[in-house]
Image (tube, rainbow, N blue to C red; front, top):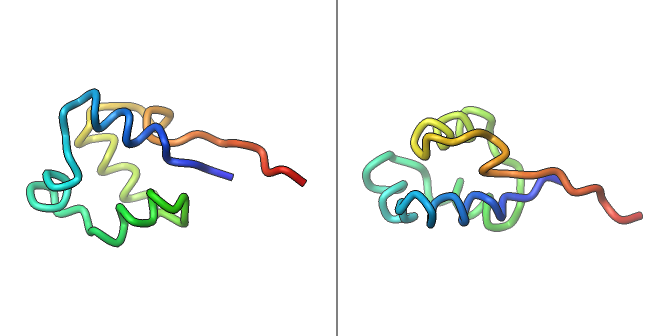
Length: 68
């Protein structure tokens, strides 16, 4: 499972709020909701966030093996 807990940490570290992502960078609120729920996210959105936050993909998400 891919989780996005690191996104919120990186945003805090970089001083970028959800409001800024929505209103300045036009990131859809529904996309942010998907991040909160660890749901399906488009790679183009991940790419945009890496550019906006000036970070690497591992600063946004991580893979955790599913428990069986």
